[in-house]
Length: 185
Image (cartoon, rainbow, N blue to C red):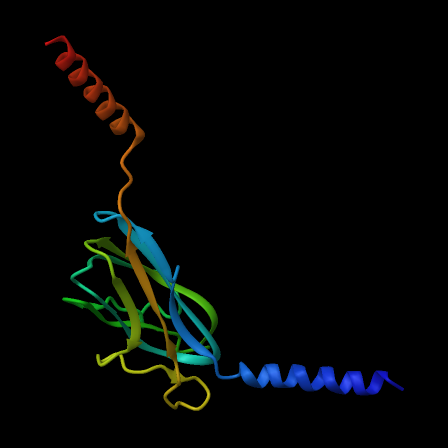
């Protein structure tokens, strides 16, 4: 007798979970936080996680050009090669990164590529965003309507470069030599 209420509760929770994630479409970078020294190169993967099927569309990556210097965009072979395009590059913006698949659409988790930057200063923030380029928004494969997509950001934190132990030993040794020389004089 107690099994039926438990089954109903479990079914309701499963249904609520499925409904809660039914329209979760996102583009994000991983890792979402990176610690690197000034002068280092950092590379982040750009991931598409769509629960709805898309024909395709475009997005931008905005970055703080005072803290990060763009080095490269390396796209992965995802979807229709004729749909993929390289972004227009300007100060602080990679505009119109595109991906799509006309015949069957794209869904699920896809690694779209990687983006690399040189760290110039602390506080480097990167954000994926809707594009204003000709690529346009992501289009639903079934309804041909614009899709709701959540765009996320990542942060690059500049960390101080540790002074190697050998430098401290050398400084200590030089100090001892100068001290010894002063005592002799």
